[in-house]
Image 1 (cartoon, rainbow, N blue to C red):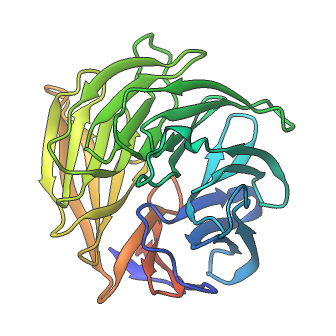
Image 2 (image 1 turned 180 degrees about the horizontal axis):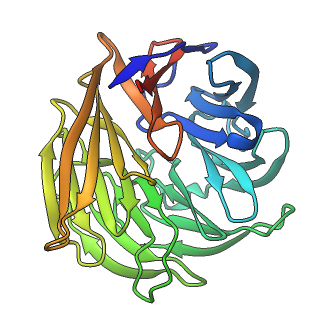
Length: 335
């Protein structure tokens, strides 16, 4: 069971974008950072466990070429083995900051040369894998940036070109050392999933075809891909083969966010039907298939949800954002 905790006030609501919440826990300082975007700006908030906001910062998208300010599409903390970077994507480019948002260390402008006159140009989908940061684009390409241990000498090392429609989300998990280990999944607006092994050259391991519905959010856990779709379904696939384990008719409307608590295998799903659900994933000891148990459901009435994240790796608390909701809702487990 989870109960509602003290919410964190926002200066404005979250934009109606999928995956519109990023969370970074700092156990050493007993703090949690939250990031939310709306229009041309992003809000960064730091809060103590009891929910008292301690600091706020606003970031704006770099102007680039153009008259109107660019709209931000996503913000996400990328935890690398040796540093943490805050990555912000927009209709003009990709910005990378130190973790507190105080210093911008890198700016990559998007090239609109391949876009038609009626095609929107944007970046969306952010994840870290090893010492790389992957960012998706409107063209279906995934940009892979090689991140140094410190400093601004970030290099665009590779472009992955297996998707034909805009990237919607990217998920990663630490590789376990096996040669064939899948550690990166990219998803697009057609529902296609591509499973990769990261490295100096990313290797495509398998493709999981779509079925006419966008995949809005994706996660990766112990070789299992969890994908949330525009029809409210959550599907669990074997990453190495692409075979489906489980199909869950989880929500009545489009899913806007998935998240995983890696220590315990809990999966969080949130959708436009105002519901948040928590599922427990486990592998059957007999045949290795994924089993799913529903653990909790929560409703935020009259709210178009747009972001949801666990606030700790054990899944004992989570946070939710919604369009036209000027606060971050927080829930924690009842012990």
